[in-house]
Image 1 (tube, one colour):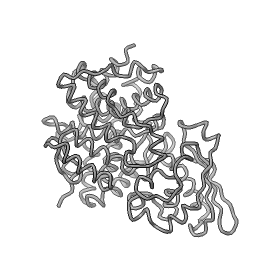
Image 2 (cartoon, one colour):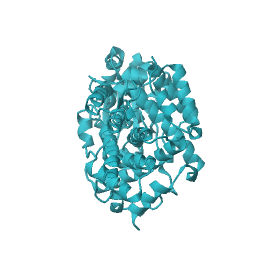
Image 3 (cartoon, rainbow, N blue to C red):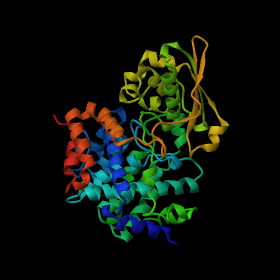
Image 4 (tube, rainbow, N blue to C red):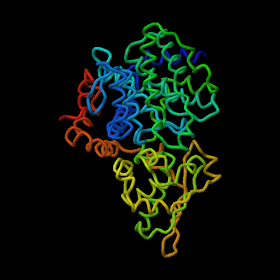
Length: 442
């Protein structure tokens, strides 16, 4: 079977009405969650830097930089909004590709939605579904054919190009070249180096989103690309079920602004303190048994937002002290809170061979808390909250998360209007209102 032709047919031929009702509904949940992360992410230092760069170096009037409402080129808007989407590390993910599909796809969909005369809500959401499905398959193939664990932008560029190409109505020849161009120019970034030294490069999602939009525009103008990677797949079932099996239903969502690898430890620590009502000031030591990649996260005091997210001890301590890990905890001055830092200094990590064996299919941790009175309490093996298939968040929980993240940025009333619009976006003839509600009103 020609899997590239299979992928092209899926992108071009599948429309909103063709998707099962649960997939349609999940697309709105994904939009709500990813857009919330992106809007809140616009308040981070990295997004503010990229906003200035986007306006200076990607001048134009094609697309919107979220929150501030300034305009630039479509590729520039995808770059800026892409960096914001993962800036708080609170966006969705897919376990087997160890990355973030939504933050890769949505910036390209937003940009493409402004490039055509009128993009309906159904077209917008259908492109989002296409982007997720193509992105997850691309990530599986990338990881199977490259030895080094690489960032989301490496396969996210194909996800964004597929979604943008869907909105812009590319034919199969142009779309093939767009996908091949996106694959060739995608950032193949060494992910573990970004974890060893946390920095603003993060998951290279912003760069991947920009490559996605540029690849579509280049292909439209006659640029030719390599043959896309789908025929490289070592497993036919990754591609031949496109349109029949939907991996968008198997995402995890994140309740905390921290690396997903740290979130089983957060869940374990909170489970113990909830079950045994241990005040944080009575904790003498916290031991975290987890898989190798999570144990590689820093336990040093963070000096910036990125170090606070790619950390094991800090988010565990923040959760125990504040009951949440969100923008207030991982942005200054929250990262310097004495009570959190003192507790974080009591966290130690060790590798569990049992947890290594099940990763990445499962990400597990066991937390042991020792108190000042000499008592010890274990969480037992735990996974992160909102892990599929057993523990998906409800619509209400995702809506609460959205308001929690977005209200400090846009205000409560505007955030609620935006949330309500997303649930009925398939009824809208144009997504202009959606984008307008993503801009802060003076």
